[in-house]
Length: 120
Image (cartoon, rainbow, N blue to C red; front, side, top):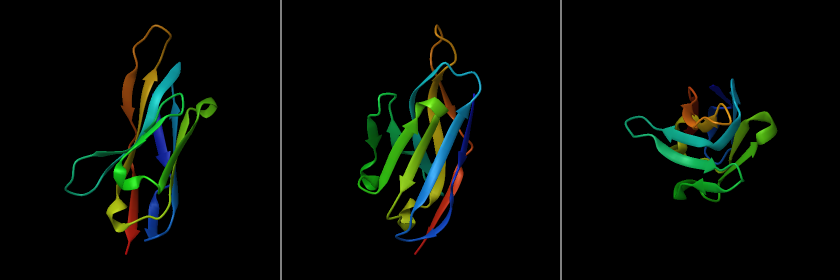
């Protein structure tokens, strides 16, 4: 299973970006999908994740600004980021719990990450 993320870039404070992540490979079903981020010198942290049923869990720092969505038919998850701040600068990683078969346990996968830079 591979996770391919796209959509990062450089934006001014107050701007918007949309990240996309598509899972490919041997996929029977995907449970939770979402986004984490890691800023220089800091630990990787949860941004927002969404369950297969559509329930989202997000960090307090992004509530009201970031919106997650998913398209189960495309094995994809999206992150709309509005009102970006310099503190949002980080590498953003896609993450997913994937079952590869009906009788297999879900495994956790990470994408390679996409850089988001917010200038002040």
